[in-house]
Image (cartoon, rainbow, N blue to C red; front, top):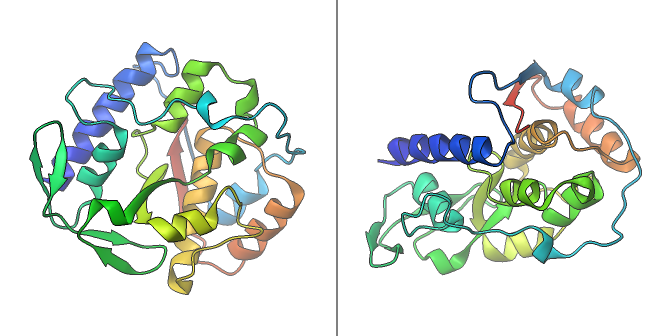
Amino acid sequence: MTRTLRTTALTLAAALAVTLGLAHPASAAGYSAPLTTAVAGLPVATEVRTGYGRDLFRHWIDADGDGCHTRNEVLLAEAVSAPTVSGTCTLSGGRWYSYYDNAYWTLTSDLDIDHMVPLAEAWDSGARNWTSSRRQAYANDLGDRRSLVAVTDNVNQAKGDRDPATWLPPYASARCRYVNEWVATKIRWRLTVDSAEKSALTSWANNCPNVTISVTYAW
């Protein structure tokens, strides 16, 4: 069930991207390189927070009109035990794993859906120059499993809008995975990094397994 839901979500996300003009259905460009190469290739630029507002990224939309908004689509896709879906996409009885802190949860209220690269960080790193429809697509990105992740709510709140130079998951064994997913999301959306972020990512890339980072560009 989980795999089917994820496949459906990816298909819907691809259709939404085409509708919004963010991708071409016949030839979505991709990227693939070892982690160290991927980090080395991240463009460095000064971050600019001017003008940011969370409401500039419309999120938790119901893109396919099935009654389940993005938050619940992620919960359905990431459940380690599938929940029961009732009414207007009310979820109950499921079980979820938060890899940031190595914790399991059975109540959706204990989970936040984290934007791997937070909305404010995305704004600072280039999204301030995007159209509103592109920012909406970013905030609801079901096209790559790494973009949105269900995690323990207070851990996500502790992260806030910080990048890996100042925050990493409290569970040490999760940190290399987190760095991989952060880098993949930055590349997917063609976002920049600041110098401290680049330095931190480089240090981690040199100490983590040099896995291949593969993404499909969002646009």
